[in-house]
Length: 218
Image (cartoon, rainbow, N blue to C red; front, side, top):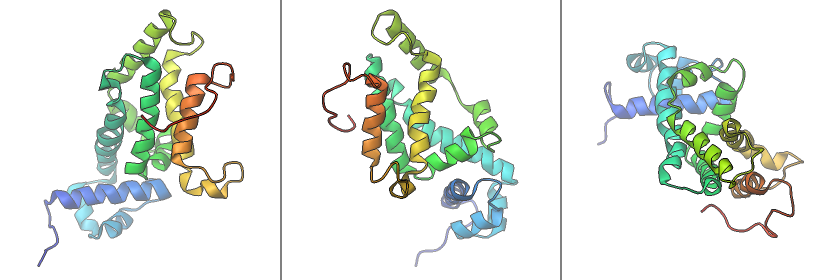
């Protein structure tokens, strides 16, 4: 007979973090109690306090292990891919974010609610902890490509990464309600990915864009 994991079990701790990010994405950090997290994880509130002495410690773990350790590490891995073509790299980043939203459905709404929004409970914690080295390399690569005439000189290297995040995360945060929004209708994440890639690569200029959108993520 399989027994429930007790105190000190990594499964319990992982389950608490999983429960926390789902509830935070649905209700917000301020609107979620420790008791609700415990109930969703199938443990007592005392078990939450065993692993995380305070709610603030729980938020620290969410930032370090979920946002940085899972999402940012996965997306930034595209920068380590050894891609020398800046346009191909941008495309890979877009699809990494789309894939991350499939792996972590809680991610986009949590990001918009608690990282992007003013007063978000995770914003300052993330800023204080995230390593910007890879983003700096991305920016430098775009700037170098501009000097070589391979990227539009009007693009601001410091804003491009943020633009990629904004064009993907905001609509992905509403993905489960797309079919209820008249201006969106029935579209898929693949549609979104292709749209964002086309927008970033070709803008609205029909002359520079492909005659027909094709394919899916590389």
